[in-house]
Image (cartoon, rainbow, N blue to C red; front, top):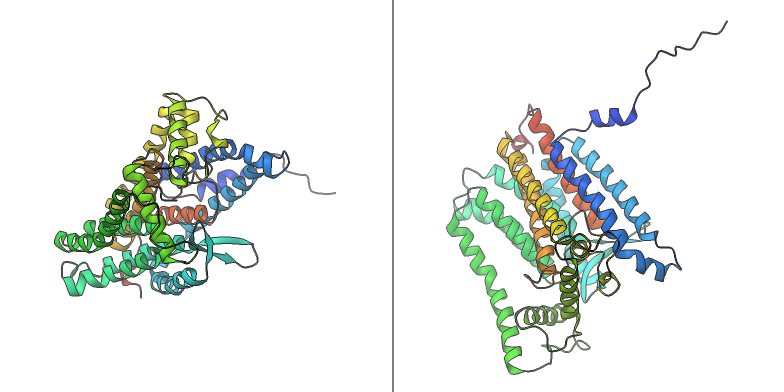
Length: 417
């Protein structure tokens, strides 16, 4: 006689099992999930008309792509947060050294979009990757490692500050020709981390002074060109390439930001004006989900300027809520920094949180015309891509530090080779 089935045996809940294995700061988990849900609504609204036009009436194609990126991103966060953050100290040096030739390769042989070589093609999966995203992640791992090891000599210019600052300078200089805004934001994040890492304020100010020299020349070139009344670029676009073409773009953007554009339909001025119109239409409470009209006219409405669509549909209240989310995220990461028993984990979590928060604020500042057009995305909200995946990886690493703060490690990361 066959053995009877025990109907009293409780059913296992796979989601409950997954939740039990999910550790780290619960607030950061909640904020990340909230942002990706907002992303679904915003991307679907911003791409509906574009999808209808490009895919013969299929308005959900970009939504499905975003869902796939979100699922992959959440898996990346989960996997990265399960890895002991000591591992990231071990691979930091190798990963940083690998990104240097990768950035050089991107400058000379990368895929050119919007007059800049920022991408490389990934084999087999038919996608492009912005190498600066990988470089930022590798730099903060390496910088956190160096800072933790040089706390005793960090106030010494030669023994402490320079060895830490040189990798930052190399990375920013390699990123700047193709993506100046990313290089500036990355440099600012690193200097903030150095300040918290007890570097001398005098040394930081010297570094800022040196880095400001090309910025002053850039602003000066924009002022001179505007006052001369010349519409000619520094170098003809047909006869120039690479850095010279980017210089023209930088000067044009700075001039447009300071004085406005002589041509109302110029690319930078058109984007800014459309973003302002979207914000004005939104008012306090917005026109409602899916009711944006500016999305049909605003370039990169699903990416660089997605915050304008959020402001139009959800108003000032919705925009303020997005700002609040990023500020709470930064606050929770600062709490992790203060609680972390080891310097490497503390610096790693804080550095990654700085770069995500500064990137978010820069994106929103561009939308409301407080900063020149940069091309940076809104973390976890802009339409998915490799940048979305690297953002998820950064959040996973932060949660890895938080998970081990809950249960302190037996071995110090600083002791790792």
